[in-house]
Image (cartoon, rainbow, N blue to C red; front, top):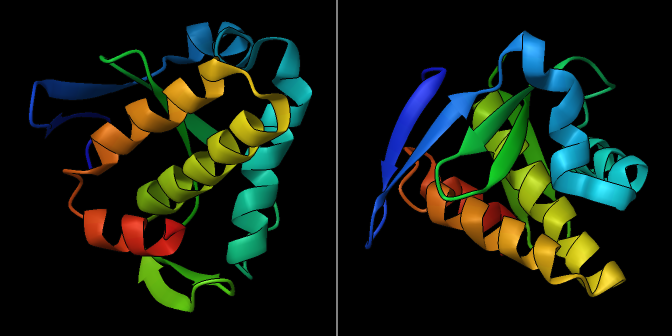
Length: 143
């Protein structure tokens, strides 16, 4: 997907825009708040748990027009994603893998913290992912 992309949902178009370098410093605190360290680490750990070749690196940030957010690793793709809990084993783009990692992290944060904000981030990103070119793989991975 291009740096600025649009995804249709049943009710509205959700646009994704890459966060410019000049605004990166404020992005994670805005979305993770007081859970910044935990939230960021959970995204990285989520990808590491499902992608054998991932061992860290630079991530791009994207803000969604519906108030959501996601991160994607800046790696050469595609990446092989394996989810032991549901048997998922496929290659997907780095963007789709980042969406999966963020969905996993937002879900974990929602359950751990019981803060509605993380549930909202999950559903906002899920709405964007629903019309993504790799939607079937994204949803199969998080099933």
